[in-house]
Image (cartoon, rainbow, N blue to C red; front, side, top):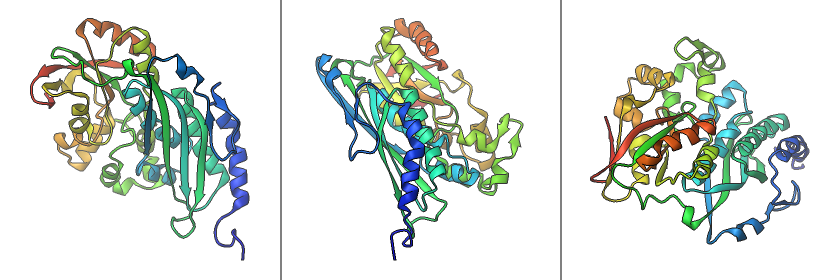
Length: 343
């Protein structure tokens, strides 16, 4: 008896590491100390000394049951972007710059090429957010997970000067709300997505093209989560003060928008102020999902919302576009009980 006969292939683990090294190298920052393969990742904090009052920010998340679609489609090179996005977007939402990321992959069986594909996506997410991929873990779980299954999660650390933190404390009635377009469903609500498209949850079903989507169902659903780090950095570099910010994730508008507000303020968002992607309209119709539930579950086409002074609105729109994102003026802040009105 040996470890391989028990279901854990050490040699496959070694091969996975070798295959992923080329992707990891692309994410390196000058602050990274040492290489891949140590017992911990090392990152120099010498640059933080230049800040008046540095604050570390952290985020951890996964991709939820979106992973199931990647498994069905046998396409694993973008799901890692989702894992990074869910963590770094939260850090950027607080005004921070992501510094480094670590991933955790649990699998029923280690297929080195598949693991390398997953890490390729993780590396791409790190490149997009300018975070270094300084470590991770691939855990083989025979008997706990089916051989073809895996799950992916991650952890990120960022930093900002305390004076630059986005807290919402300076939010005022009259502030303008600007939303940034999402790429689709992102990584939330997939248990409902899979229920709506239950009959289509096969490789053939997901590879079916839909005229209203302009692509296959699988391509629309697997589209990686948009990373907004560069957009928020562009706002800062343009001198725009973001008074409050909300990352629209699980819980949609009704849960996430109030998190950016201070007591005595209320967000008013106009539903017709931006285009709702076709995938959401298709889901609502096919699943007979009430509009309120759609906005209480999904991002509905906006992945990030920022509040700025009206005088800064035009400059903010330009800065967001310069970063490659698509902004919309979607509403305003009013005095009132903390919450959100969708009208």
